[in-house]
Length: 150
Image 1 (cartoon, rainbow, N blue to C red):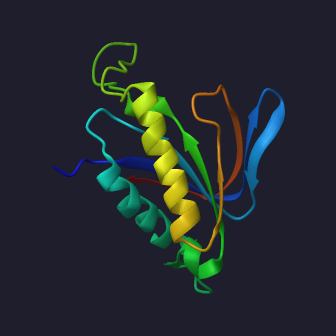
Image 2: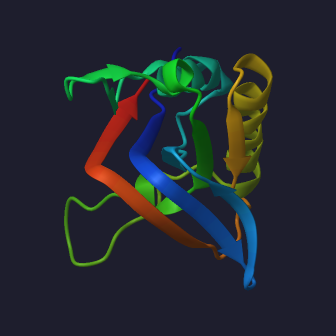
Image 3: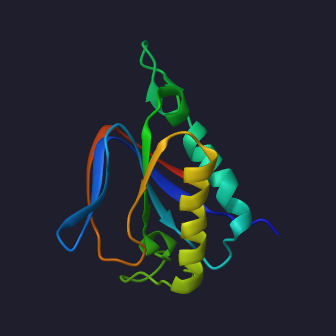
């Protein structure tokens, strides 16, 4: 069984994560990745998702076409856990979080994603602090935003 793992990615000229008024991670040119982990997600999806994020062509060439990836331009990636991406918003006026993976298990998948990004690819990777109340600041380029699914 191969789960579907989703990541919202935004092309940025800069991004940072602050926890308790201290910057814990910051990047310049790169991709800000918001990751919401659901009950059916598994470790099998982590490596393919990291590979796809890093190789996804969202940076412009000299003609303005999106032909370059993070790897191509040596850019950075900032990973941020965001449980609200796993919400069900189909009905009512309040989101349901019943499809989210319990926090302890979600942290294991998130940590594995951070580990894979650091180990497998030669780019600068930063991460937010799982389960923390974070302030995320970003300057988007474009704006360019995609929902990737594996």
